[in-house]
Length: 152
Image 1 (cartoon, rainbow, N blue to C red):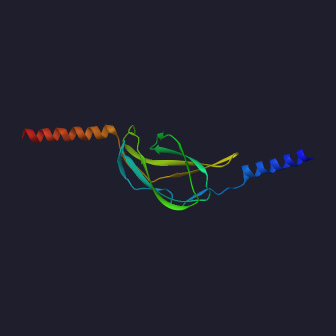
Image 2: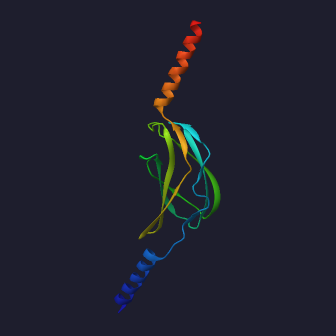
Image 3: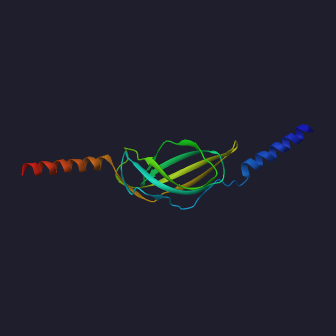
């Protein structure tokens, strides 16, 4: 009899853990605004995120640079706290990105309990990346112009 009650309790707990509509986060301004509209590959960019967290849990964050091709950066974990905030988030732009117009796609995976993860997604406004190829070309043109001026 005790085993039957324990099994029933376990089934109720598992059902609650897997199907209850947990409220994890609200993103208040989507797409998130990029405040660095033009950035060189290998340097940092900033975007502004306006959000409200409803849980104190560990999250896994995955960011992707998207311009038709998706360039994923390594995921990382961090602890989030309940509350609302407007936060300026700085992140490095991979030095291997080609020149182009990109936006970020960000996935935030919440570990709400041992049986369930909830993933939320948001994107940013567009920004321009100047790749190493274009940076080198501009440096070469500046050197040529300097040599021409010196010859005159």
